[in-house]
Every structure is written in structure tokens, then in C-alpha cells.
Image (cartoon, rainbow, N blue to C red; front, top):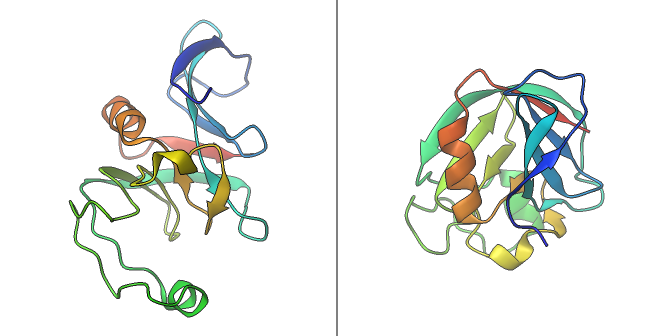
Length: 146
């Protein structure tokens, strides 16, 4: 079950930190008192997974999407750009931008992809969950990817 839920969560990171556990396919928003909000996520496919620490550098509602040239070379037929709000836009309704990378925590036009490893390195949530996370975090939030 990849639904959002509150769980016990022991961590060294302070409340407000996002911790992404790629192997579990879960994102944790650390709360006070040893708790966290847990969200199910989709992760990068084999060869596209990564680990590290970044800050959220931007937040966008109904983000536009411009797939990078490397992605367009791998996946024939991708558009050069897709407007925000387009129901086929793979970023869904909200996006949180990670550092100066091309990676994002974002919604998904395909909620069945949550729990799967099929992205090019981004983290996908159901649109209802990314909207919830979006309102709880701000630019500057630390994101730890494990």
C-alpha cells in the first residue's frame, strides 16, 4: 500500500527533512517526536537511481516539462516541451526541484507508476500526495536520497 500515512521513524535528521528510501520506494517527511509522514513513490529505473543530498530550490504548480536531449534520444516520440496542466504531462500537478539537477519530486499522470522503478531518476508521487507534500515543505528544505 503506497498511501500516505503517519509512522514511527527513528532518524538523525531534524523535523522538516525529506528522506527518500529508494529501495523501499518510500519518501519520509520527518516530524517531531520520532514520527514521519510516509508517502509511496516511484523511483529511477536500474542505471538511473542515485543517492545524495540536495535542497529544494524551486516549487511549481502545474509545471511545464522539457525532456532533456538525452531522454528524447532514448525515448523516441517525446515532445520538445509539454505545457503545465496537460493531462499527459508526466510531472503531474506539482513539482519540487532538487538543487541544480534535472531531478524532481513530482506528481504523476500515471498513478500506477508509484511503487515502480521506471523513471529517469525523478521521484513520482500520486498527484494527491505530491499536493499534500508541496504545501508542507518550502524552498530550502533538505532532501536526503538513500
